[in-house]
Length: 135
Image (cartoon, rainbow, N blue to C red; front, top):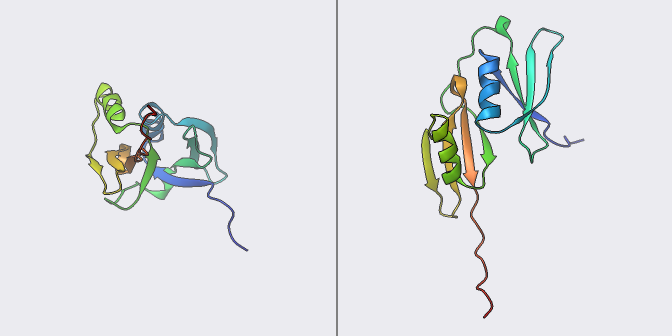
């Protein structure tokens, strides 16, 4: 028997509300649900508008403080335009932490830092070459 699909990815945090605000206001994710687990974790599930999978943000103080190691993990999101996303960040007083960089395939990517040190990759996929207009 094999697994069927990815349901969510969990990130544990020290400050739940700061991160929820970031993911909603900066990235545009929607809050799907919020509850307290049987062991006392505060959980908030978020998702991107065109995704099925969710991100579970977890605040569980009795596990001790969270210390995110650099370059351990990141979330990647598709965007239509990194230029426009950069303008959106600037309006919020933020900027890319790395990039934009164009790969050999034409894909453009950049990174921003979420609260608590989690890294977010933003990917603008290569635009297909358009056919020449008929004339």
